Length: 114
Image (tube, rainbow, N blue to C red):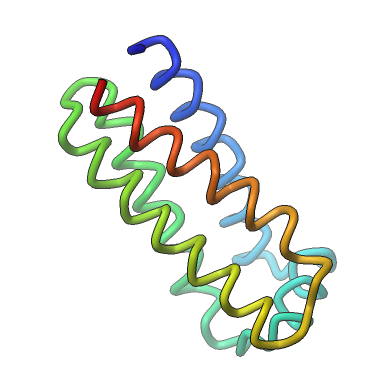
């Protein structure tokens, strides 16, 4: 299962680096997505920081798995919050990407325990 943990962690880390950079650079697609979820622009740096902290934890977790488990758990909660924000705002278009990242975060967390 370690191979699946590595695959899930590296894929999630790569996606999250792109997501965080999009938030920090205020990329049009990212801004439109977060606007549909009614996320205040002032939150972008904090959300990007949370994503990058998750990336750091996932990568460090390849060497010390408890840290990877903690990072994956935090990211799972992060994406539950993302899903909730989209649902609360009535935005159904953001559910797919947030749901996929929730699944990938949970998969990294579960495989880190096996």
